[in-house]
Length: 145
Image (cartoon, rainbow, N blue to C red; front, side, top):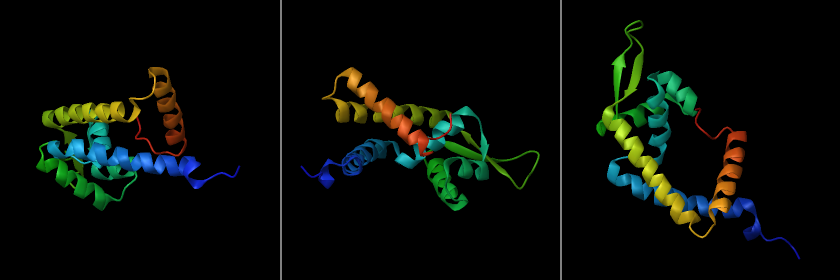
């Protein structure tokens, strides 16, 4: 029997990825967040970072980080302050509101996970998460930490 494209992991993951991304984005929208904001909030919860370091860490251009930070500032999640040592440098800090939004985003992600994996046993869900985490890490797709 010949293999079909619809049997491929690439096809299945792309279709599931579409569903997961749309569902996650829908759950984040009432919070004023988008999926791309989540890694930024998680990173900043560890320690403040300069804008350039943040861009490098999440693998986007500095102009993309500026757009993301503008969006996050608009919902009160972060603030940019001048570095006291190098006044040309801006340091980004998460706010208390940002920490709360990050917790709410994690809850939204857990709800989407439960919807997507509800037909699996806990052991199957855990094995799938572990395997996907291994693959994502091997492709440098996960934020540090």
